[in-house]
Length: 140
Image (cartoon, rainbow, N blue to C red; front, side):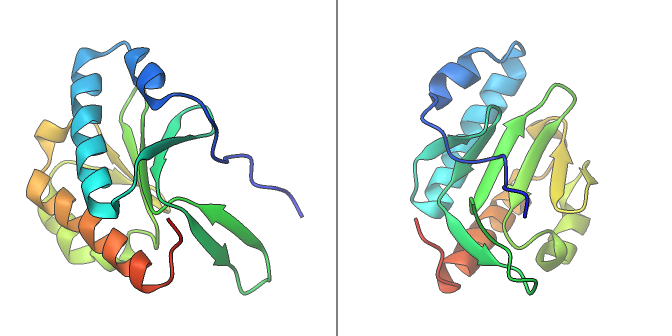
């Protein structure tokens, strides 16, 4: 079985964000750091070279494949933020209708700027994900 390439590293979150060229992305990243840290009670950690994750979650697929991922996280990519919520976007269907300007991938939420979304709705999504994962036995 292929091994997951994105794993926690000892790289500095602060150094990574300081290298982000867009000032607005750095400011929005600071907001996301606060929201996700408050929701999970965890400090941010780099996962791979470009994702900031909070908490850890051990999972097992029906196929038997296991792995470790983070509960919530984001990456300030050039085009848009990629936001990752454990459990996917399905549980947030109603909130997504109220979120504002965004696009979706299979399990990612893409937001260009936080000013284009309802921050309260995004906070609800992050909090709900963290609460659900803590009930599921997430390891921090």
